[in-house]
Image 1 (cartoon, rainbow, N blue to C red):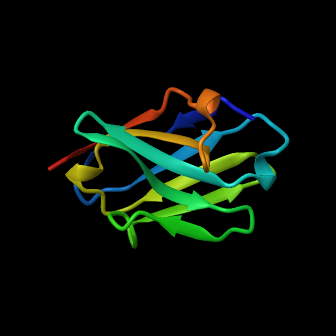
Image 2 (cartoon, helix red, strand yellow):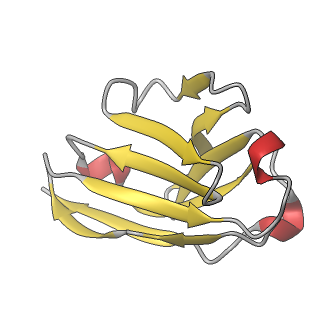
Length: 115
């Protein structure tokens, strides 16, 4: 079902919002636990949010209450709604399965939050 194709990043001021999308190509998307990850030059890759195929969700403490993960299984798209963005959210955002599948990493989408 990969590699995945991420989109929706950009430059935004602190307090702003962005909605990321991730397109999958395989038939197993609806049965897969999916996640958003991010990586910046200063930090190791971290899991931001994950949605299990039963729609249970988990979030990193740093984004709880600000980010919302969702999915459209019919369209095979994973979303990440990001509100009240902070400069520390600046990173390249990727989607992948959870746990990740090495050869499914895409190019990611850059999110830059200015203060």
